[in-house]
Image 1: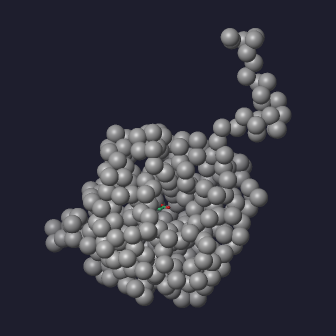
Image 2 (image 1 turned 120 degrees about the vertical axis):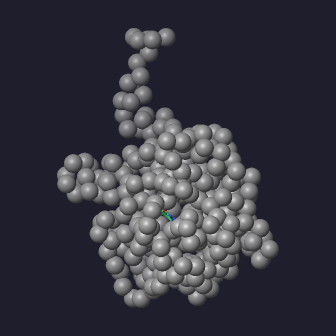
Image 3 (image 1 turned 90 degrees about the horizontal axis):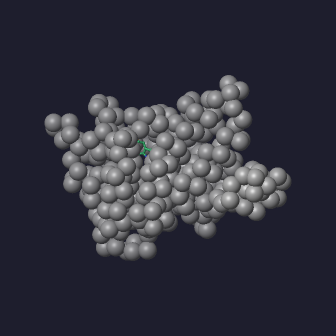
Length: 323
Ligand code: PBG
């Protein structure tokens, strides 16, 4: 039955009708608020991410509480350490910035889900996500030991989930084994499974001070041209024990989100990354688009593609809009 019997516009005629047949729901309950935490007492603006700041632990506690009050169920913590070294010592220091922040946030807001990013890049002097050998290549298996130590330190501090973002092979299995052996059997792993070597992480690297000092991340992060490989990465992570698999970035990879969801049938997270945030903010500041409409459309599209969870710097604000 085609036109004129069928008129698709009939169900678009009023707001209430449109809402009744809306297929995708965007609500605060799916959102995760990323936060950059550093020692000290300040809030430090991030030039490439207008509206986002690096926060001292007490400011992070306050911001996490505001997000939670607006209905955001989870935060994702990134530590910005005062010092870096070759072995990323700060990443697995039980008194490091993330461990301290987790304890403080959980104490103030026990119900808020606190997820920690597990990686070495913000803690290594060279800015790579793993341990670098003399020939400047990244040593996969040695890095696994340090990543597992980082995850343990976060879990012992009270993290509700750990999220490895390093893209070393075998890290989900390594983390799972170590967590199980060290009293954290119930701590879920949110794996950055299909993490692409993306230009859209630019602003984040300013925020976390984690740009690689030499080379790039293409020997461990994925080639943006590949989707079959992304599905394989996700399936391997599920096999190794991932509880949630992630696709990152989001908007340029909506096809990958859908394929990973269909192939794994496990909860899928998508990360609307720093560059995606910055693009909307810059265009809106220039008056080129309607900021609020653009943000809601972007996040709804990510959900429509198949993401159960959306990690976004807009989380708190969007939760406020949706109230
Ligand atoms: C750490 C990490 C990065 C992001 C999340 N975890 C940066 C990178 O891989 O260079 C990017 C997040 C964003 O851009 O918002 N490996």
